Image 1 (cartoon, helix red, strand yellow):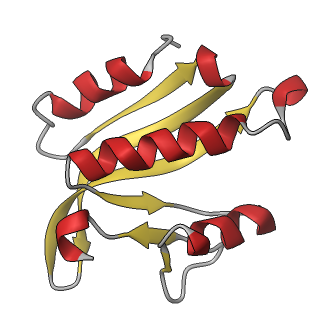
Image 2 (cartoon, one colour):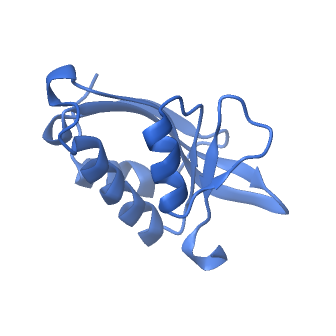
Length: 125
């Protein structure tokens, strides 16, 4: 797994996405976490829109509960807002994260089990 900075992630997002999207495991040593991300297009009623999917993440055990995910996530939201992307977070199993997503402007995807969330791009909010 390659190590990435937020600047590396910006470059990855800004490069031409493949027709069916691109996906990759990222390790962010500065935040002590790894994440599986997809830059793709998703259908959000009523049309298909560019999206960053957060499919999985894990904070190193000894660094949990110290705000690393929160800092990374805030940075991710700024990056996606700058690029006018929807954000899709899938299969959330952590109750604290469920509440945090709702507080950060995410909407629950109805009927998703486990819960999934979307956050509209800035031009759609």
